[in-house]
Length: 109
Image 1 (cartoon, rainbow, N blue to C red):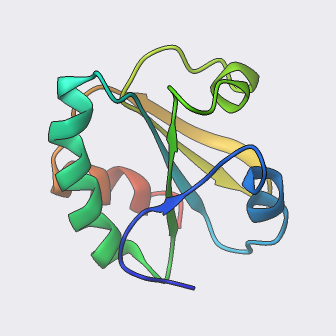
Image 2 (cartoon, rainbow, N blue to C red):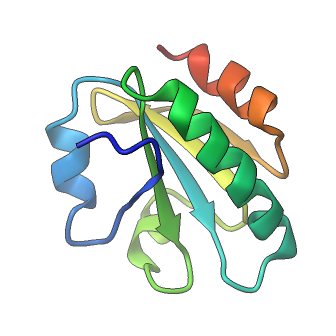
C-alpha cells in the first residue's frame, strides 16, 4: 500500500482510510490554481519517500473534494493536517520545504 508518493484521498475513501490506519496520516490540502501548492507538491513527494511506512502520506484536491476541507475548516492552501486515531492532532498552512515537512510531521510519530 505504501508507494513513496502521496495517496489521493476523496470523499469516497477518506473516512475508511482514517478508520483503518493505525499510524499517523499526513494530509496535504491543495488547489490546482495555487502556485505555492505546486511548489510544495515536490517537497511533499520527497518527504513521502522518507516518512513512509511510519506515516501514511496523502493529499486532498480542494477543487474536486469540497466536503472534506469544509468538514475540517480548511480554507487556505496548502494546508497540512496530521491525524492520529481518527483525530486531528496537528495543522500548519503555507509553503514548507522537504525538511520542514519531515520535521513537522515526525513530531506526531
